[in-house]
Figure 1 (cartoon, one colour):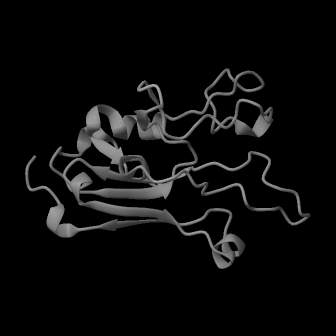
Figure 2: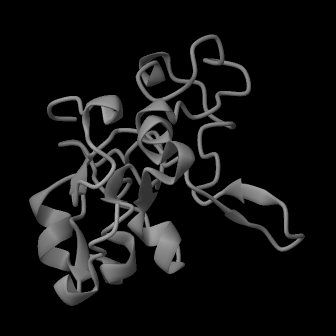
Length: 161
């Protein structure tokens, strides 16, 4: 991830989209089939045991339940400061990583997951129109991360704090 953004230093009225490789699953929650809140991105590390997952799972869970460390987005999503664009728009789940093979044809050992996110501050959320993961042969060949794209209608960006 690039420079760390401290949400405490960003005025609530700031109109921002933050895009990036968070190397973490989103902390966004949505109602599940039973109405209870659940993570939009399901746990994906529970059946794995890799020593080099320490940057993507909670400390103390490696080799055990291996729960995703979602602190990066949890901090930004706290109290509705920002929204995860894909979760807000309810788009079907699509991985941004997990398709890449190393030089010897070995698949990504961590599997398919969405660790590239687009987050919008509260004033921008009403302007979110569409979200997609650009998945094409050329993008799969070009990088181990698929690009995420969000369409925004600037006329719908809130002027209210």
